Length: 92
Image (cartoon, rainbow, N blue to C red; front, side, top):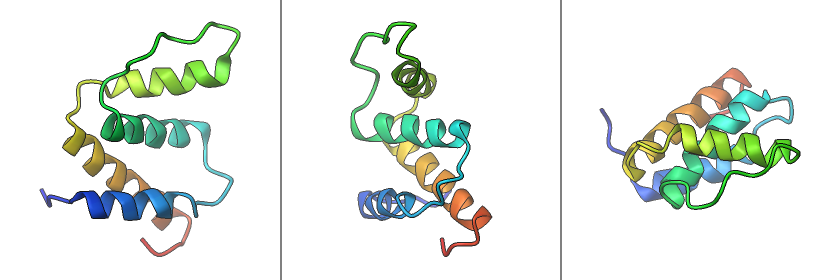
């Protein structure tokens, strides 16, 4: 597997902001969870209450990737953002 560095991760974090607005919530949550795992590490907050659906979904997406190392999360994030850029017909 190609080892990507922090510079690559930061580049794709910037590129992720150029994704078209029509991304599915599922894809947005995947990249959110991977980003948080890569930058913060394991979940460090309590799960939001059931009436806070948006933050709860984001928390769940982060929790779902909790076992990944920061490097794994960075590599998976880059891979997912590349895939979404290619699907949108944008340069990856």
